[in-house]
Image (cartoon, rainbow, N blue to C red):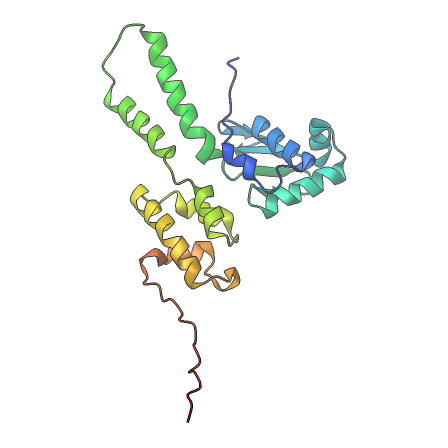
Length: 223
C-alpha cells in the first residue's frame, strides 16, 4: 500500500487554538485520518476530507476522554475548521479546508511522479501537465484566504466566505487586499462592517469609500 503525505500550511501557527493542546491534537488527528479520496461505507459515499467516527472511537484515537473530544470538536466547529453531520449512531466530520490545502497538490505530485517513473530522460511536458503545473503555482500565490480573513477581522460565516474566495480571480483578490485597509479606516468599529460573505457577494471592493470627517466646533470669536 502506497504511503500518503499531507500538507500543513504555516498559517496554522496563527490559528487561535494553536496553543490549546487538545484542540490542536484533534485537528492534527483529523488531518491524518480523513479520507484522501471518496470511499463507500455501508452504502453511502464518504467524500475525501471526511471521516465517519463515534465519540468512542475518536476518544481511543486521540487518547482523550469523550468530554474532552466534544469540547475540542466544538472549538474546531466554531472557528470553521470542521463541519459535522450526526446520526444516533455516528457522525461524519469534514475538514473545511481539505480540498483547498491537499487535493490539488496531491494530484499534481502524483501526476509528476508517475511521469518521472515512466522515463528518466528529459521529455516535453504535455498540455495537461503544463496546466496542472500552472494550477499548482496559482494556488501558492498570495493572497491566501487566511490573509483576507485575518485582515478583514470580522469572523462570521467562514466556510461560506472561503468557498466564495476560492472562486475569485487572482486580480480580484489582490484588489480586495488593497481595499480592505481603506475600508477599515472608514469603518473602524468591526461590528458595523459588512459580514465577510456579504462583502464578497456584493463585490464591495468596487464601492467608493466615504471617509467621515470629524466635526470641528467653530472657535469663539471676540465681540
